[in-house]
Length: 240
Image 1 (cartoon, rainbow, N blue to C red):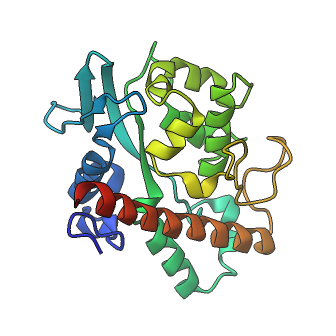
Image 2 (cartoon, rainbow, N blue to C red; image 1 turned 30 degrees about the vertical axis):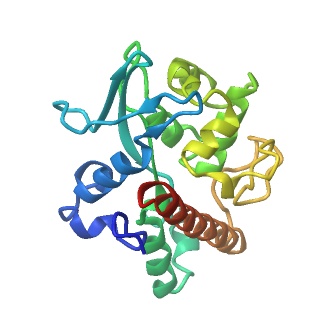
């Protein structure tokens, strides 16, 4: 385990009861700042600060000005009413373990937090869009299509933040920067979806216990693999 980042740390443990770690966990904010303050694919440093008033993380340089916030990418959907009949069939100890895994650093990312033209952010859009429903594998497919100029359910929102996505040059650059390699195929041309995917006409949420268990297994595997990738990154770059 790295002395800089504990990939087993549960961000709810330093978040006030009833509050969201994305906003209120000081450890999560520190980890984000540490992990994503690094060189971009073009070689420029993307240094983040946490001292700008009312801004979670901030970057300003010749590259532009970027306001970032944390977003959970590991979701159990245990609090969604429409999922309750399915989730209630899963033993509580399994759900507790699933939730705990999703509450570690592998289950979080940053997105731009500033509204453009007073329209919804990426965080908000992917949460309310019925074809995505906060699933990060589907979000990443939208981002992949954005880089390839292909239509997707989040097209308008992602286009508003094109300057942010331009920092990473291409889809592979984005994936590598945020250590998301375990959610894409080796050629970076397709996503390893949590559930079988044909098109965005598929229901975004599991609609039976078998699909939910498959979703849970694949979501957990991704978070754990990303946690290991984060440890490897820390060991190879920040501790060397």
